[in-house]
Length: 277
Length: 249
Image 1: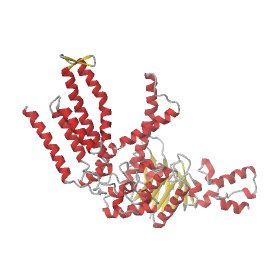
Image 2 (image 1 turned 45 degrees about the vertical axis):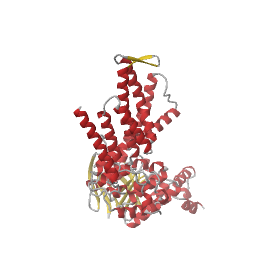
Image 3 (image 1 turned 90 degrees about the vertical axis):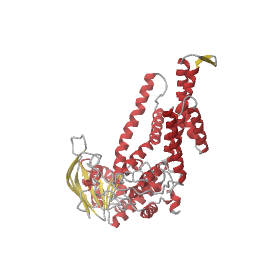
Image 4 (image 1 turned 90 degrees about the horizontal axis):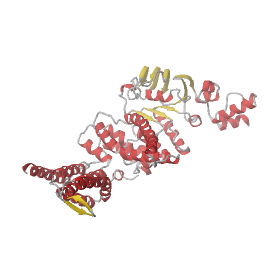
């Protein structure tokens, strides 16, 4: 199973410019696909379109084809099978749950699952995200990081076939990022499609299996993260750039050019140490 | 991991639809009972029941809301009402106007106390479960409940914005023009923030099947007990009796 976008164009309501302008990409099941691009490149919009939310919910105009299991998510038939997570967890709460447990149970209840199935799935999701101790807490009293984990649990409970996440680690501390990375890897291993839009190259470099660089609404680079992050092309034309280690290596190279400071750039501390030892 | 039962909040003593039904009955009685002594008696009875029910804070909230209206009614009817007049604290006030103010004030007070008490008993999840158990359209129930329970969140956000703007030097007191400028500085971020949040929340809720067409599963049973039935029937009987008396009079 693959999530595939072919020549997708999308224009937000009231806008004269295309936020996506011929975007094509394939995100295979079993892999974590990372969308990176400068601000306004269209990564978040690509997730909205892939989730079937744009234009069905947001309005706007879409051209091109989007396929998941040969179905178009935009038709709305995949509700409950797709997980969509944004950077602001407080905006994703139901607003009607008094406890974390109820918040996580919100979607399964809406889907009419039998109550025994809801109990088992919610308990498992809370355990998986380390939220068992918080099950009785009012979601409105949680910290941003805890809230983001609740939102992830509220999606995990559905055992979604595809995860579409927009800057999901922005509210998380280091431990939370590690936990999220583990979740994304295990969901990919389960066979889910996982697509993450993120500007956090240091974190995503260790999580993603493939990187798609988006610029002006279209994919301009695609391939293995290690190779793209070590290259120079990802910096071109105001591109998203690479990891902080690669940025440091570029800065060093600009002041002390030479064979030991030329591309490919080291992308993490271990590769930098190995190269400069 | 505690057992399933421990995850669900302790059951409220009444079905979630019973307190609103009782509040509606109090509102109807407040209008139907004879002036000027019917509404004060109703207010007294409502306060006693609400306090005995463990909700004295609801009485306090209601009285804070209606107190300015009581003053207005007193000045309006007492000061401008017809003769004869009685001396109250050195002022000559209309006797019939005072009685009218008493009745109308008590009418408002009874409605406010019952309304605040009913609101204090409501829990969003139980209302949704009760709605689902009755086979109500899930997304309509969600819309109504989420809207009702958004008010405290809205007030909290307004307080946060107020504090932030005051920290940045906004003065909330002073001339009328200054206050209007302050209001604009508070309202703009509040409205823009709400619009942005509404967009995000709409997308998230769509993903979480808030608009799913099928029936919603109640997460906890919401039994309609014999006590609920008797309370509702009793309230209905009182309203019908008051209505019959009013029509026959």
